[in-house]
Length: 323
Image 1: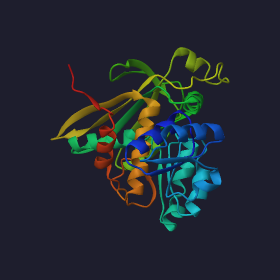
Image 2 (image 1 turned 90 degrees about the vertical axis):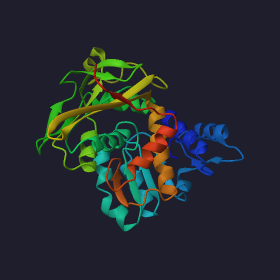
Image 3 (image 1 turned 90 degrees about the horizontal axis):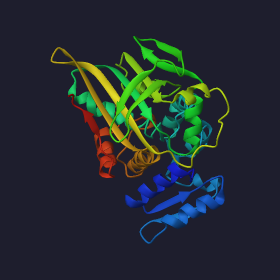
Image 4 (image 1 turned 30 degrees about the horizontal axis):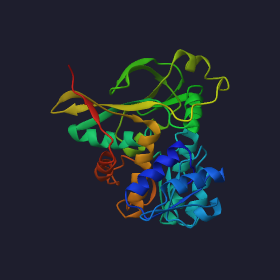
C-alpha cells in the first residue's frame, strides 16, 4: 500500500476486513504510515509500516498516492509485482497504458484508474450494457473529491483541456465549458457539470472499443471555474463530503433507441478505496488472471464478480427509471 492518506486508509481498512492477512503500508510521512498500521493491525491481519524499498517484495502494490504513478509502476513491474493505480490524471494514465508490453513480458498486471471515476464507471458500463443489443454512447459525470491530492487534481482538471471521443475522432475542448445539469443519486441531487481533463473517455474506450461517443464531466461551482487557472486559494479539506458518480449509457434494444442511467452516491475516498481494494485482492487471489495493462470494464476481466464484491462492501447502485 503506497499512500496512507484518506483514500489509502480506506483501502487498508477494506483489505483488512476482506480477509487479507498481511498488508505493508508506505507513505512519504513515516509517522502517518505507522499510525495507519497501528490502527488496523490485529491478530487476523498483520499491518506493518515499511520503507518504499521494501514494497517491491509484495505481490500486489496499490498506488494511492498523488500522481505520477507511471514511473513507480514501471519500477514495480520490473520485479514482477502487480500494480493497482488510482490515478485520475490523463497524462499519467496514458503513460501507464504505454507499459502494456513491459507488463506482459513480466507476467504482471497493471490496473489503471481503479478508483471511483475512473474505475467503478467501467464496471457500471459493462453491467448496464447487458440491457442493450448495441451500446454506442456513454456519458460520465462526477461529483466530489476524496483527499487533498484528489482535490488538487480536481482543480487542475478544470484548467486543462477536456478529451472526448466523437464519431471515431478524439476532440479537445476547454475545461469548464459545456455546462450540463446532471442529477446524481440522493442525497447529492442535481449539480451543474462541466467538461474537464478527465481520463474516463480514454479508459472507457479501451474497455469497450465499439463506443462511438464518450464524454466526461465534473461538478463545479462558479468559483471553481473562475479560479481554476490560479493556484488554490485555500488548502483543500482533509476529506471531501458525500460524492457521487453517474453514467448515462445509450444504444439500441429491439430496434429502439434506449437510454439507461446508473449512479452511486458515496464518499469519494470510500468508494475509491473499496474498488481498488477489491481489485488488489482479486489479483492476489487469482480472480483476475489477465496480464498486461488493464482497465475496469474490459471483457477480459471478471467485472460481474468484482462489482458483486464492491456491492457486498455496502456500496449501492441507483438506477433512474423515469417519472
